[in-house]
Image (cartoon, rainbow, N blue to C red; front, top):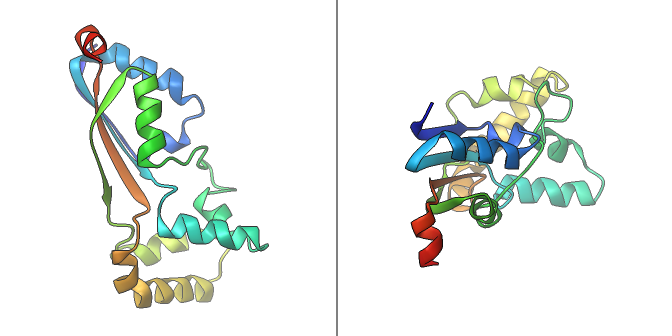
Length: 160
């Protein structure tokens, strides 16, 4: 089948062979079809903070971001630049990129409680910390990026 749009909403980072998947997307998109990717970003404040903590021996936050020990861990982290390059190298041209809000308080405690390694008290303290820092989080680099790209055509390749 051929599609006008294919969307990966918080899925792409879990796929082992992203190049193969992009090739299949290209095969199933109509000319000028759109590919929409929404995923966690390695440019965001939580990712960067967790990485710094990991370098000083506090690994739990970084492992949580990678969803280590979860049924479907993250296999990749991208940012707008390397994701756009990956797409370009696989037959897509980015037409729009952007960021979404890093976190919303609505449903946050439920998401935190999915990690059964933490006690309820630890989960509550994480929720409370995020809640208190929410004004600052809103102005920091987002941990969620999106890229909308179109399937390159022969005409596009010729004009470049």
